[in-house]
Length: 323
Length: 104
Image (cartoon, rainbow over all chains, first blue to last red; front, side, top):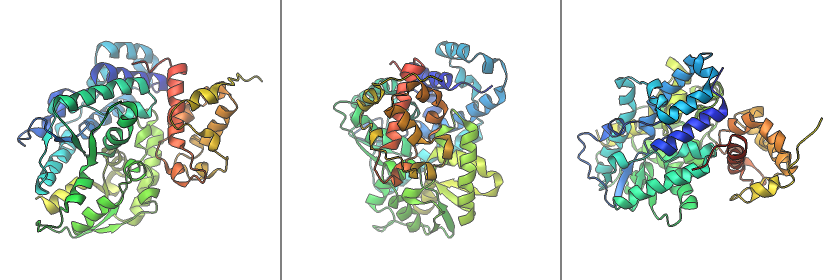
């Protein structure tokens, strides 16, 4: 028996309230990507991950664990599971990704650091104060818990003197840019995604060296970037400047088709079915696709198996502009 | 067959920012293009709210939480309804009143 909707939401909410993330991870795990980069702590402008890329391999592990549980004791005693979770972080025990799986996602913020430096941007990082944005909890309607959590994020920005945040993934971008101003009084933090910053800085121009990538790639737009934040042209501008020939699938740009990821935590079978439909659209347009959201990446890669290759946009851009 | 009607449900939800289910003209574009298809069918959910059929809304919990919030429907809605935010508002209502969750 799958975990009941209320219990899954309860566990996610408890985790955000008690441990500052829907899936709590140690700061050693969430800050591993910063090692050796020499990023200043805080400052007016910071690169902010919202833990999204770091969380994904653990969420994958958790989904696998919940799948495995099936009719086991926890399936029958989910309320006990929630009670236990309040005392012990059971989700951390259940999700154990390999070092190789973690490295795939840690690589993204590292690539972004090199790209921003190449574009001449000066910025720091918040290390252990780089908190989860609350995106999933907000989507699930846990508004009071998210408002309380958002205040902690803003306190971290104030503590480090942050005025401008550069985000990586679309979910953190929309939370910090469009949701926080509505739920936090006096919120005055400027927020741009690194794709917008790189486009504005003209990373491909201004005499910057480019190592063109010869090839074709199908663009999978993130729903949140395209329809919530209007980020449609920036990834295309950057990928084209990287030398790639871009192909649009049947649904593209503001009409993009969701990867299914948003319902993964509650209804994994529905998420997988939706991802399969999207993969079919993408495969009809080419053999390799680019994503710009970690949830899209994991859902589509998983649905495609070996039939199609997916890469995060940061990987192409790093190769072309900062290798 | 009986239905538990809460005549104040629509007003209660309308206090939330931007809840505008009453702008829906039930044309069906959202259902036609929804990636989740009949798993969601937001216009039916909105009718239940407008009719105050709270028990029906709760009975459709899986539909409410199956929405991807991807805004494909919203992008194509001829009435410009804030569909995703309406669904999120319904979730907030269910989480608080149905699941007893959500307090900070």
